[in-house]
Amino acid sequence: MEYPLRGKTALITGGSRGIGRAIALGLASYGAAVVIGYVKNEAQAREVVKTIADAGGKSAAVQADLSRPTEAIRLFDEAERTVGALDIVVANAADIVVKPLADCTEEDYDRIFNTNTKGVFFTLKEAARRLKDGGRIIVSSTGGTRMFFPGQSLYLGSKGAVEQFVRALSWELGNRGITVNAISPGPTETDMMQDRYRDKAAAMSPFNRIGDPADIAAVAMFLATDAGRWVTGQNIGAGGGAF
Image (cartoon, rainbow, N blue to C red; front, side, top):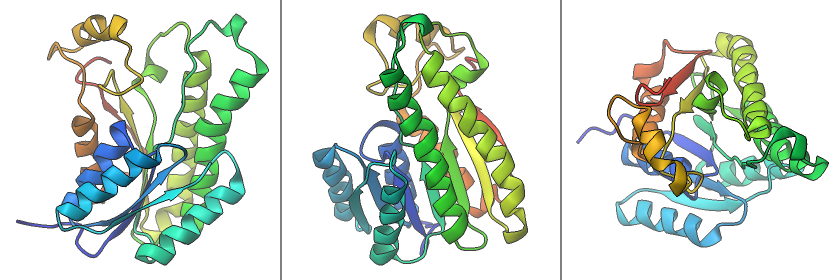
């Protein structure tokens, strides 16, 4: 078996469940030592660590609330103490509110933008400062920014911002050989997928199904390896043809 990321280190925020969990398991299966960042799902984060350890890999979980910039610094500090200088950072932490824009409150706005935009911004800032030359930065966005979804203005607005972070940062880090890309999943089997939308979401794809987190993780695994060395500044759609 080949291990294209043997000797590499990775940090995945929002890595305790869903797409983040799948990416963590995928990078670990390629040989990377993986740090799982989580905010409240400690049991799930520990389960990911155990799954990786049981397969012979190295992993650790670190709690951090990335809406607070000091917590992003602490997360990176602890990750580096655990696995060493980082080669790969995946900014995946996210939250969602579904309601009409006119009904959204300031509290809703702060909650979503603090996690999805502010948290990602300061994660990227630390990654830009600390990542090894030749490293990889991967940001989770959403195919929803290319479509029309009433009731998701806050979520889509927050994700649209991070797509622009990716474009700018790819140029700022290009001279160090660091690639910076976003992945935009379509409807995917995570806890954000509501049962009432599942059939309609499946019908959006030529494959007549919604995505599995492993489908998205496969794209991240490609970007994290040497195979992705010539891809940067991109927003890669991973929606099974839904957009």
